[in-house]
Length: 351
Image (tube, rainbow, N blue to C red; front, top):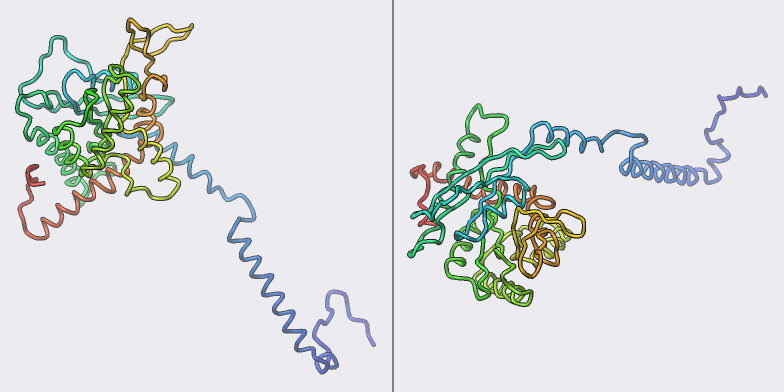
């Protein structure tokens, strides 16, 4: 018998093997190969054989964000004398709002928008702050929220008009309000009817973040009792403030937001004055009893507010503005056009 060359060995079953149950052996080998192929497919689905570069997407997004920068629009609402301008300047460590000396209380509610580009570590942010001098300062404050609602709707309308153009801009300028900080006077009692009505109406169209202004006028016990009363009022009247529980996307996000909700409303103190304490420069308010450190969590909750607005939830505020509040407005306006109704802005009183 001639030897078979190496590499050309015939592995086909011999007739005597087939006759002695070789078919069952072949079926067994086929099942083993199928199992191995299936396992190999699972391994391929889990992890590639070599480096692909998927993780570089984050670097690409970072480079693009640093190239174009981004916008953040914040509105501050509250009575005069509650430190709105000071708090904004403290939040961004910049003279964003400069109050004119000797400026009195306006007779009617005004809307003042101030923009400034803030740069930090190569990242640019175009910050726009909308101040509302005159809110709640009149004898008759009925419907004093109407100009604010109208202004918010006007920004949605401006964005919508750019968005529905046939040849629209690659980057639509965004003047929509991403967050509204509402200043609650440190009375230590319950929320006023004005506070309840404002937050109830504005909570439907914008992210409202309530804070207790000038919290250093309250003791720690008074502050905690006041916070509990406010939370009870919000729950009793069905007022939705940011972060809204119904918008939590997963259990992890809900857990993080629950910790934030436990601290709302934030009791804050604002100042742009620096003092020397134990050899270090700190932001604080000097009183006869000592210095109230703004960024010390045992003194006030300014750091928690800053983390929420800038360091942890800024992008979430923008996402909710675009995907929830603006989307609701967009659907309403497009339905009006489809139904043939007039396309002018709704009156705020009809909301």
